[in-house]
Length: 294
Image (cartoon, rainbow, N blue to C red; front, side, top):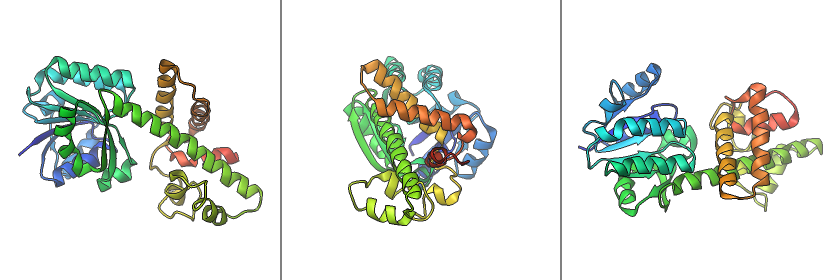
């Protein structure tokens, strides 16, 4: 049986690990928060004392951590302790430079690795329908693909080291910008006396159609499964959207790209977070645009 070490069992990591257990893998897990370990144990994950203990003997190592500095620290701790044939998969959302440094650490220890951030939120993690954006060699991707399948709706090989993170950053910049655009349209419609349903019925079948409207509509009613119908509980928290938008702007500055709408979206989400809404779903920014509490 293939053994998988899973390091980082938070809101995303725990359901992802649970789906690997359901698929028949032996999953050895570690997280710094005891409450996350309790949930993971209930899902069938074998709880280990620390990250090093988790990776010993593991065929695959998956990390799902908050930032690049955490990934690099963990990689430095565990790479030398892993099996020489082990595959490293980092599904954290981090900056491209850190992703490439993580690949370099793995390569230094003769380990295959991919960066494979995800899209789909906690709902996709639970349902096993995440989109994985993978960066790394063809050999590493071929080895990783069957491991990712129990957690995935779609898996895309985006290119070499760091390409997965680049794709994730670009995708979420689009998402942040489009959600603000959709929210502004609904705020304007309200001022003009147009109902939410009327705008949705027109825009969802016209040139304004986008995921932020048809799947994640920021007003209650038209899309019953959207967070707007659940008090804007995430979902995908505004704090995480701000993190990704900041990553996009760091990448744009590094690459010399001009992204004025991305920059404006980052500023608006920074203000939304600063008002105490970091834990709300990112679609709740419609309330900020209205000037009303989320």
